[in-house]
Length: 392
Image (cartoon, rainbow, N blue to C red; front, side, top):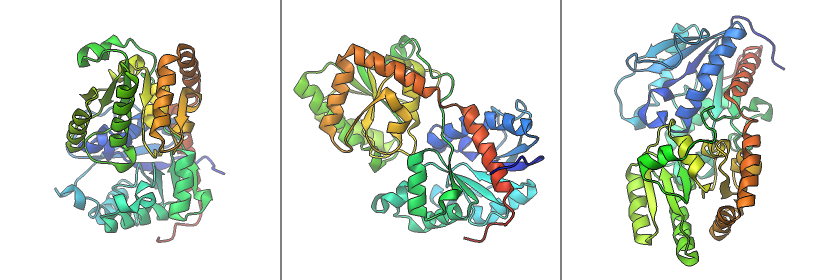
């Protein structure tokens, strides 16, 4: 049980807001959604947040606007990304001491110190590298160090029950130390005029929508499987729907574009779509479609149902719980069943309307204000623990 801790000073590693490849991905969106409401909760509870930021000072969406937030800029040597975790083991504890932090929160496993010098809380979005080590643990030394830091945290905040279950199983930690604190969608995600994004991107209805990162290969996303399933369905069933993939394109996206061209089905790679336009793009889609084999949360699915757009996905990971009654789910790995579910949603207007209304009701269970409240309660619980954490 947590108890109010007056004057609690918490440092939060907010560098996902500053690191280019993280800012527009899940961790960056998590940081952007959480920190403003968290600062307000801190102020209400008589506490203080110190956000650790990277690089030169730039306009911040938080400091100066939220009374419970201050910022501290960190200096780091210029290193390749593959080496960037190692200096944290020495430099981050020094920064936390200078920040006079009582408690430190890592918003993900990355940039964490094995022994930060103060009690710590860490958000666990997933433990995918431990679940599929043959794909994700080729740089095993770095991941062993980061997961050692996770095991040493006083509390782990899992973003879903699926993430909680898998963190307990694969990290072998006490279940009492792993709390579920879900993500949320920004309030801007609501039914919107589809013409805003459609006209700029050249998207014509009907279309199926996928949203995510297309820069680097991530096997669990199963994008090649999605493209093949879509191409076969469109060809065999003479379907009119275009598949739209929205996300920043890198090497992975270019390879997928070539694969889609060989398959002969129309796939539109829309590139990065800013948050201002995403509600419009979601709202115009017949459904949000993903063939991911696992998500620790699946924020695009929540954004979709918030806009009244049904979700079609595999019954795997956290997406069935996140989309709830706003989704249709196929057995994990059954691509034919996945596309049959897409066809039902596209062709049955009454079904699509029911899913749309049920999804919007379900989406109201999630909010960043609630997430911030649960996060601060976790801080108070961690800070109220009498015994200091042992070295992992």
